[in-house]
Length: 212
Image (cartoon, rainbow, N blue to C red; front, top):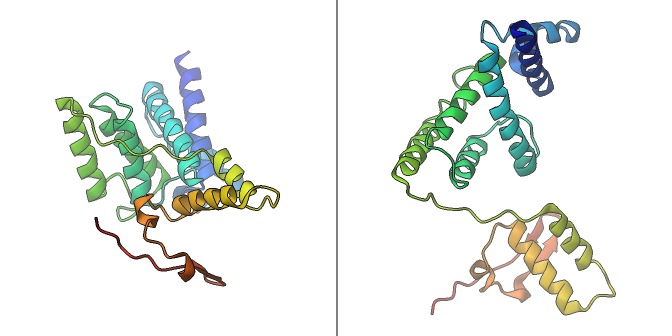
């Protein structure tokens, strides 16, 4: 039973590494990559592999929704997930457990010390602070909920729907403008409509800051 569980979780780790085309597998032919991916698991026990695979699947599901990727390539992709974990909220040890999984996967993937996100200074500092907040029972700052993808698609379709009232089409366009420029409502309050131009470089305009 132990052997079958070990083979099962080694296979899942190997699938993750193969799908991401990690550096450790690039030096061999595609025919040998599967065998090498299994060997990269080393002497890790089934329970260890299971723990990391479950955490990694949780992370990659979030990555796919937030960034449309299956492997992190930027520090922000790790920091955002740490904040997401803490906002749920989660146990005080979860941020560190996630970094252990990230470090494990990066080590198996053959990433160099300069490429490893788990040991990045900003990532380590963020995880430590979140752990302290969770241990103290302080609620970490909550991020705004992301807009559902279907809502954004519906707004884009409504903007070009010529039979709809122009006011509502313009309202939908402003909502999209806020999203694509990562702006708040107040950020667009001083936008001068007459200054808006659309050319090959995209949409540009001028905003005047308003103080009350």
